[in-house]
Length: 406
Image 1: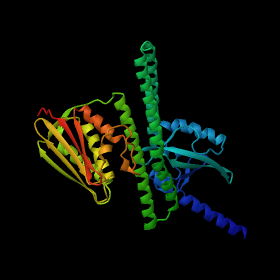
Image 2: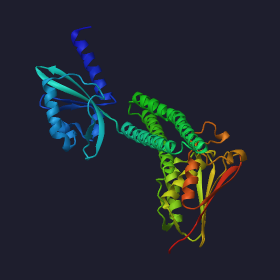
Image 3: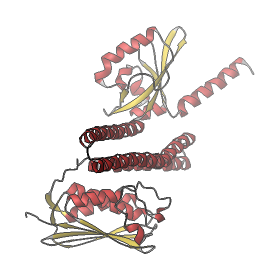
Image 4: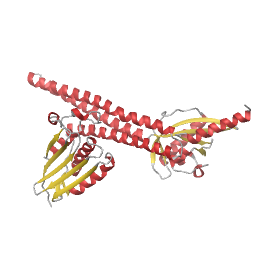
């Protein structure tokens, strides 16, 4: 092959890599003026190529970091070297519309006709950053809880040395704490594995569908939806663990107020319709007054959890019935489905931490939802009842006292 042909083939390969890469690529000259950007980078920042050409690279960096960044790039220009992803401080970029997002940046450099150029590979890490922050927050909370419980244990042991029975009870409490921690590690590792694997595989497959055809676009959309659903699942799992932590520490504050229960229930139902299985639907009926005196935030959490369970354990075309009744002294809320049901034996343990019914099978869950619901119900002086038969469906009935001031 001739030298010209070889150069032409190399140029084609370079253009293909540059245009089809699933990471942002930006090239700047020795004066930090943008010389080129690939389609992925343009889409990431919301600019056209003509809008960026010859602009300073600082146009893509939040204003508060400009001075520091000029110093960093000047230092880099004097001692250029390749810098891989993930090395250095936390970095942020800014889009054309002014919105900021966290990024990882890898740097490389080359010389062309005596002039130095720098190539920046930019990767949006918003989703990963959010997951890391939530996991770190959860870890910190758990570590703090364990530390506090350990301190309490030491103080209690010093005070109860003379009482064998009391000391025995204290040791039992420490055993329960250890079991709770072990149970958390076991469930977290199991429940996190599936959504994380889904996110990884979908992200890898998205890179394969680079065409603009309807089929590739459809496949990309499908895998993006899988990623969004998996991130939502991880968020729900983390929220369950955080809620249990707050309950255990007595940090849940009840804020009672007067509000329209019908409007709240309809609002929650509308929000959750997008998560229903194929052809599933909600049917809602209200009787009596609409004004109640409860904590609207806790009530929403109860509704979301019960409706989510009803959908999760029902068939694709299942009907989920919501019923609310309000009179001068009480509020009744009922959620009923035609799903797999719960055995009478399992009904005795439904509100225990980490308990899952024997017929739950491979349906994902932490076994914390009904425990949280029962605690929220107790905080509002309510009671919860489960009516269920295997393969015949389930109905949860919650009753609250009602003391409206209007």
